Image (cartoon, rainbow, N blue to C red; front, side, top):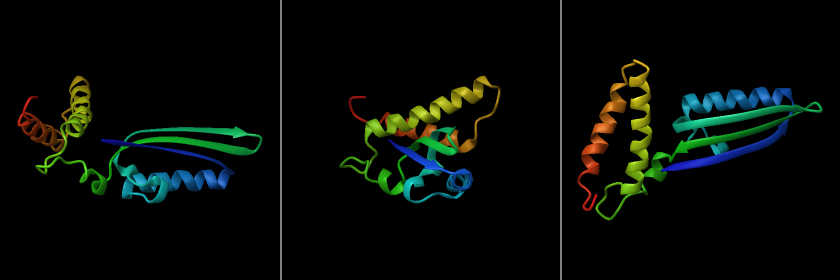
Length: 127
């Protein structure tokens, strides 16, 4: 239930600043083109190197599928595919456990999502 994108480019300092602003805007408001679905990221890894007055930018972005793409991940009964549901639950469970171990209260929407997904998961025959 994920999408990986890689961005590689050479830039000058102004283009680097513009890229970082565009990335921040995409995380906050949703992106387009190569930054589509960045607002649903799980991990963003950015490497920036200054190589002979040219800046090398490499970014790897792991995201959930966009809502339009996620809608396609259903079985014949209209439910999400078991594998997709399991992957989605993996991220919410990991978040819940991490926050609890840090002594923080998880956000209500994460808990609610996990409980709803758990209830749905036990309805699949054979699992």
